[in-house]
Amino acid sequence: MAPPQLAAEGTAMDLEAVREVGRAVSAAHLFTYLAPEGAQEAAEFGVTDRGPAYLAFRSAAMGAVPWQVTLAAFYNFSPRAVRAMDGVWDAAPPERWQAARFRAAGRAMRRVGVRITEDRLAEARALIDPVVAAADYAGKTLAAANASVALPPDPLVALWQQITVVREWRGDAHLVVLADNGVGPCDCLVLHTASGGLPAALARRTRRWNDEEWAAATARLVARGWFDSATTGADTASADATNTGTTPVTITALTDAGRAARERMEAETDEHCAALWAPIGDAGARRLAALVAPITDAFTAAGTFQSLRPT
Image (cartoon, rainbow, N blue to C red; front, top):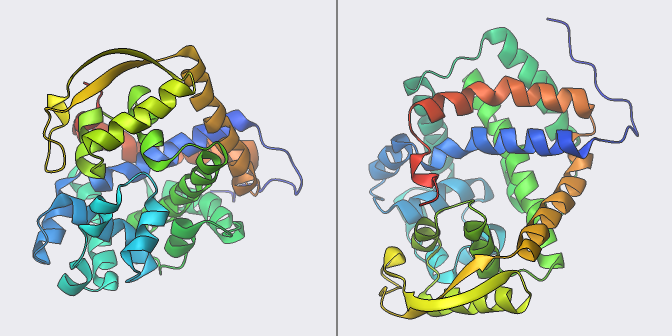
């Protein structure tokens, strides 16, 4: 296999290529939060609640930081959701959670039959490694933390960890865009669910925004013209420990202005990410997207993402 050609310095990126590779790496990273292997590894530490386990796995690269730091990095989670992780570092230190995350990723990928040949693994690494090495990590908390983690010896899991770095880099960049546009933590989650990105009941159960907070965020989006306000009713679908399901809530629909605003913020995020992918250029970004697609394909075929389908 010939080594990939890196892009000439100063070459402008096609934002469609940036969007394509961004979607591909996000999809290839996602399974770790849904596959049962993660819950099994967490249970070995005595942590059986999926919320704290999620937070421990994803924040382990940052070390045993105060919960407020995790909250700042995760953005669309409520303070009560993040505070629920109290005790996870007593169950096991962050480095053991990180090792368990690698084990879970490897076990899951082999269970569903992810097949990437040695040549294609090497090609993918030859593309993604220069991106990770050249990235500017200023303001990119989760990306920087993951870039500091030593890669595991398993070649497939090592590729997945490099995917994690660039996925978190885009996520960190998106938080800057949200803040610049005055879209707060609960507001962005309401907008995301209305756009079909995540079922509202799942979002509220995992991020733990209560009825009043969700309604207030919705009202702010209505005031911006991004939602049309309709009737009121009881939101029984999202009832949980912080939400009785009996409080009247506003039922809304995303407006054309709301859809345009969300797309504009995605485009602004792509613009931020153009510099990330510049070392390999448009062709390299598109090739990497194709090389990591078997990860997503295998988990899709296994039904791993069914719970994310809008209801």
